[in-house]
Image (cartoon, rainbow, N blue to C red):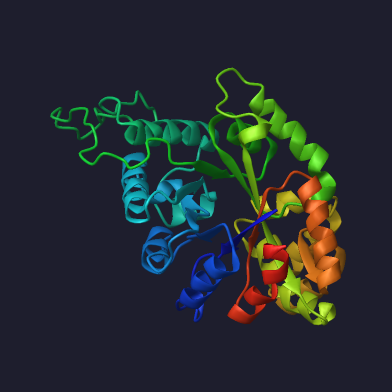
Length: 345
């Protein structure tokens, strides 16, 4: 089992100990550091800034949102980061949700699977640098010939030669069709709210993608990285209570009531009635009650919390389920260093 540090995206301000945690993660033996974005901080700049103090850990976006940049702009950012880091970039991509895509980026959310396929193809063309980059669209036509075009656009080839022509592309995916697409066209899966007890279901989705003609990878060389709260503590009760308001937000308040991808994940786990209750409470302004309605087992399905012996035991469970890397969210250097014996042994 390998470990990645998940720094996520920022709140009102940059996280206080992020720079120290990045350095500590490399010292402890973490394999990678990841950042995210939503509608505030971006995913690439923190990796370039904090990652400059490291020499070994991979630097990944988990995830860079498709609608935030054109495919060619994303490829430029990835190849730049890869050069600056000496070949350590991992490009994690995701579609986000309609509220962010249409409300923040001002773009249509429709056909996310087709957009993802087209987007990844263009990024790979840029990185391969085997010819001029073109796309028939319909989502990202190159050259652009639509309304308002001058007709002067021409296919181009990146000026900068990528350090690596095949930077790993991992996709953030939650539903069956998206996970299957990930197995078909990507090098890894960034799984959020993963639970080992549903590994068989995930395997069916992945195997569908691996079996498609032209699939890039097989299970043997495909990376599965699952986000997971891993906390070594003697106060499991206190940690569960601390996490519940966050879970209530993601389950009951993220996205639109009729389309919340995180809520759908927990419905597949069998928490449909709980999700309905949390959503009703949260969206009526009763946030404390929504948090109280989050059952302990819902959190423990997707997190590892307990003393060192329990955490070590659960790491084996997750590894046997097929997870190759845990993307650990933590908020202090001390919590991070508490994981050192598990990372190193």
